[in-house]
Image (tube, helix red, strand yellow):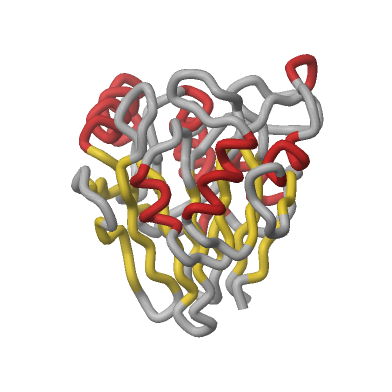
Length: 252
């Protein structure tokens, strides 16, 4: 059952076929959303995930293409009868700003609003995020324009390991986070401040000795450019996949 679903694969500017990058980790008893964009409520339903049963939300960083959908997701869950607590995880920088946004909307003053807890993650490498009988998740700071984290997931039964770079320039923290994992999911926005090219993603995959490389957060629509898979393969000899929206990875 454990799997990772790519709810979106685009960088900050989506197109008709590619929503902004966000992910959901699905187990038998726990569902963890990573980032939340406009339309996440419907995206979850489109892959047969009931938003009312979502357990955790991890926010990598406070940029609109990663967190803009949070107020609407919470409102929609409240309107459709959610009662279970939602646990939100992120750095101080991220959660401080998200709490201010939610306070401006006044959500928590609405009648019978479900409990929302905020867990602040330390800005240190391999910081524990959560662990149960299905998953272990840790985070590490990465190099972006603002404080940001990458994530490492482990399926406890299969011991399959996966790392997600988050938005980042090439940095040693990503290499250490991804060291020896079965799959590295790495951004490929381009070689601009705070981001990485597909070739740089391939270099990270090679340095971390990962099994496979999956590219996300890449330019789409009018900004699409070049053969990203070939660019990554110039630096990494293992399998390379360009993720499309709603693709999934089996973690069994």
